View (spheres, one colour):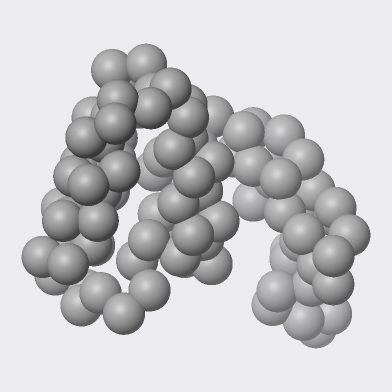
Length: 102
């Protein structure tokens, strides 16, 4: 509920750009799909979103473009389907052994 209230408060000013930082942080797993749906509707209405999020499922559901950072450096940039297969991203977030199998 708190996250939805924060979104509603942000939307009250009718922004053209909304920056969301870890929007699913501290949210139970049952609530995440509802937040993703709400944010998706905002996107469909033409709102530009900049989302900082570690939950890749959330990002994959919302993003047209992903810029992935590791230690402050861009390691992948592009459409979700490409970025999720990027060897540097896999190695940075899942480890070298996993990247070798991918």
